[in-house]
Amino acid sequence: MGVGFKMSFKYKRVAFDTMIFIYYFEGNNKYLSLLKRLFENVEKGKIKAFTTVVSLSEILVRPLSLGEISLADDYKNAINTFPNLRVLPINQYMATLAADLKSKYKIKLPDAFQLASALISSSQIFITNDKALKKIKEIDVVTLEDL
Image (cartoon, rainbow, N blue to C red; front, top):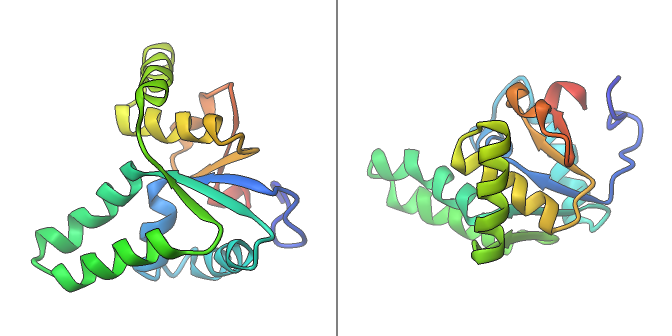
């Protein structure tokens, strides 16, 4: 059963990839129940969650491309004010760490920034739905299927 979230989630510091937010905001039927429980635990402070401004940027693409400025503002507000969720800025240290991860694993730069944020925030796991990122050795990469 993976890391056992269905019974009790043992991690206190987690980093989220962008898809976690997109699936939640768009009400993905396959993962919505799981994501609701996950975000409830973050909101209650049982879990400290981290992501980067990369997530914010990626989340805003669809509503902005559809001209849904109000929805984009809602997403931005939700991310920036969600209790116990910290959106990390990109700085030179993160950029250097991301470059190292990108060169080492041949991953896309946005993924490298997300993983760098997970390492910088001392997250115990990085939650994504990109199975290709499981090759990363520096942190446990967990997909929603694993939870």
